[in-house]
Length: 432
Ligand SMILES: Cc1ncc(COP(=O)(O)O)c(C=O)c1O
Image 1 (cartoon, rainbow, N blue to C red):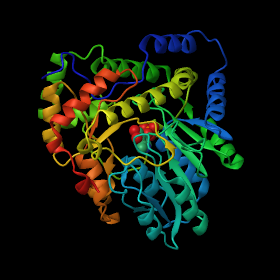
Image 2: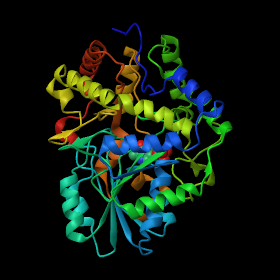
Image 3: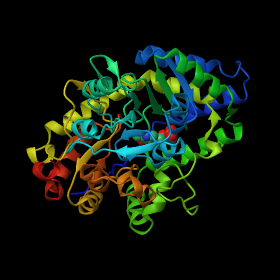
Image 4: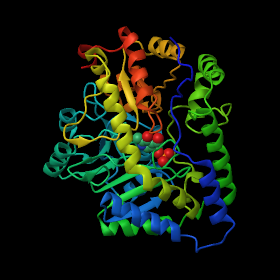
C-alpha cells in the first residue's frame, strides 16, 4: 500500500509571495527608518511571551555568545548542558574559556535528566544551559530549584520550543535569559535570526549595545537567502513534492547522505565540505544585524504561531489516538501539565534505517535530527561523558512529517503505516 501523494519530511514555514513583498517594501520602498520594524517585532514578542525585554540578534548561537560575554564567568568554569545541540553551541562555550559539562537526556524524553544534572553540579559550575527539544518543555521547576540552591545562572535554548509553556509561562522566560533561532525550518522564521528574552534590564542594555555595533545584513545577502529558501521550499512543500521527487530524495540519501543533510540545513553547496562538529570561533559573517525585512517576515509568522502550535499539538493527539500501545511506547514521554508545541514528531526506533526505508516505500519521507550528540564527536572528546540516551536520540530517532498543513486523514494514514512496521520501533523497555 503506497500513498498516491508522498509526504515530505519537513516543510518550511515560508510564504514566498508575502516574503517577496516584504523584501520589496523594505529594500526598495524606503518606507520607514531602518530599525522601526525590528522594534515593532521585539515589542510584539515581548507581549506574546511575557518577557520584560526582547532583543532580535543575528542567530541563536550569536545570542548565546553575547550572553556569555555579558556574564564574564571565570575562565575554566563549567556550563552544564545536554550533548544534543549544535556544534557551535559547544564552540561558543569553549570560545569563552568555559568548560562544557555534558549530562544525559532522560530515557525516551527530549529533555535533560534532572537527576544527572543535579549530580553534575560542582563548585566550578557557573551556569546551566537548558535545551528544549522538539517543542517539549524541559522540567523547568526542578531545574530552577537546583539552580537556586546552587546559585547558578539558567539560560534556555528554546530554538525548538517557541510557544511551549507551563502554567502560562513560556519557554525562554524561566531562566535569566532565553533565546530562539529564527531559521527557516522554525515555526517563526526570518531566513536567519535569533531572539533573546530577558527580564534583566542591564543584560538587555548590554545586548542592545552589542547589537548596535554590528553591520547590518546586506541586501545582497537577503536576496541570496530568499533564493535559498525558495529552493528549499520547492523541494519540501507538500504541494510540489511529487512521487518522482520522493524517489529522487531516496536515491540522493542513499548515495550522498551528507549532501542531503547539508541541503536540509540550508547549505545548498554540498561540495563545500563542512565537518559536522569542529572546534572553532564563530565566523564573522554570522554577526550581521537583524533587519526590518526579516522583522516583517517574523512578525507575520508570529501572528499565526499560536494557531500553528495548537494545530500541530492536535495532529499529534490524532496520531496518538490512532496508534497502538507499541507505537505509543515509541513516542517521547510528554512533560506533565506543560503545553507542548511538537515542532517535530519523533519516534524512538531500534532499527532506524530499516524503518526509514520501509516508510519511504510507503510514500512517507522521514529524517533524523540535524543536531549532534557532542559526547560522540571527536572534536569534543576531552569532555566525554557516557550519555546513552542522548546517543540514542541522535542515532536511533526518526522524525515523521509534522507541519500544520497536514490533515488529520494524512496523520491517521501515517499512524497505520508506522503500525505496519512496528517491529522496527523501540519497545518501551528498550526506550526506557
Ligand atoms: C536547539 C538549537 N539550538 C541552536 C540552533 C542554532 O540556531 P542559529 O542557526 O540561529 O544559531 C538550532 C538550529 O536549528 C537549534 O535547533
